[in-house]
Image 1 (cartoon, rainbow, N blue to C red):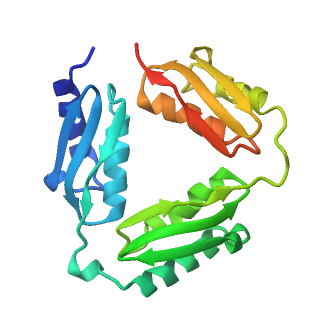
Image 2 (cartoon, helix red, strand yellow):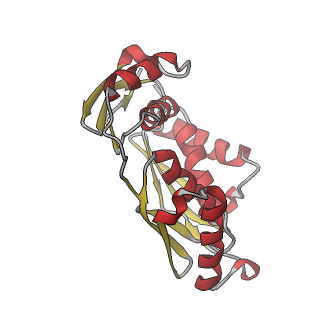
Length: 217
């Protein structure tokens, strides 16, 4: 079993390995498998990528991302400029469903509000605005409101997990209460845990996934 020191070393190595971020000013601390990232980066995309890198490391059971975004002068923009670009990005990415979404920008922080029928629309909306120059952070408050009541959600998710080569479906249980899903069990890595959650979100009509899967041997 990996110690916190081993995990810290591996997280730092993973950050250095990623060509899309500058890890020079990022600090890493690990306690009981939970990695805390501190310091600062020059874009929100780098902050998000650093968290993603840490979650990939074997032994990591959680990540606290306290990295600060310090934009260079050349990247600083006004809130109205960011808002206009965010609205345009949503229309390009989601030409039909974006009409039910709203954008609010304050001090470079983007808040997405409104509704979506599918979780992929909610996810793609956040991905679209995350890349905009000048953004310091994103809060995704878009609510899922499926038009059709989901049927046989439990069976569909279980079938999806069995098809997924990256997940050991035998170690995961699925409970469904209407449109809300609870995942339980034990997997070998954070990546496998995320993949199980991703598969659950792909089921039609799912509005919430409570991922209680733990990471163990």
